[in-house]
Length: 260
Image (tube, rainbow, N blue to C red; front, side, top):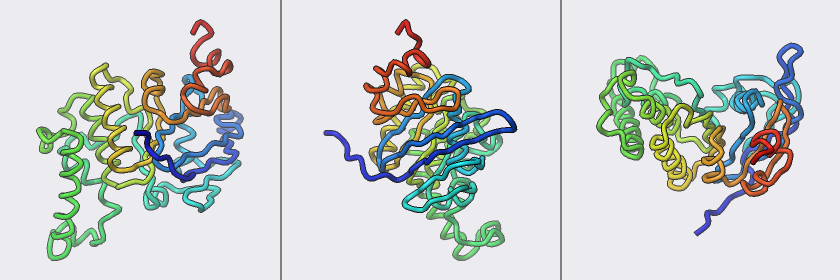
């Protein structure tokens, strides 16, 4: 049974980004539909991470706008983006290595906590009850990601593939509508990649989360994506289904190599 892709939830319009005289992105436009897995691919230096950084408010583009759920922004700030329901994982893990798996994922619940920080610290009254509710959510994510055996383990002691899973869990703790994944499988072995692919598809299917994914492994991209946008030297050179992109001559020469 094929899944139902919804209306456009995120619309990127004519985004251009420069650092001094260097053009990172030039006039990039594409959209993301509800409940799809949307991949952004391209060679190193193509501008993929810069594009995610514009969407989640890390960079301010010089031109263009981003529309999320009908609201248009020239610039999104990171806190506003998270509040609206867009979460992000990063290429380089930014986990708290000395904290447990459970506590790392709990940090993703901060925006959803209503009690002030003083009451949270003392864990009294409503703050204690609220923390218990958030902890239940986190335990559900830990079960979902199959990391129950490591819930009390300091993250720094885990293998790399499991740390990546914790990073995904922390992003899921925000209960995002749109999840931005920056190379979630970088540095993984084949088995770890297969596990991560399964979790990404399950997040998309069971939680209904829309996924925007940067990934270098073309096999992974073609297997799990509904649509793919291709960047090269900061310009868009392809956009369509995996089959359409796979057969695009410009994409073949720029990304796959003409021998393919």
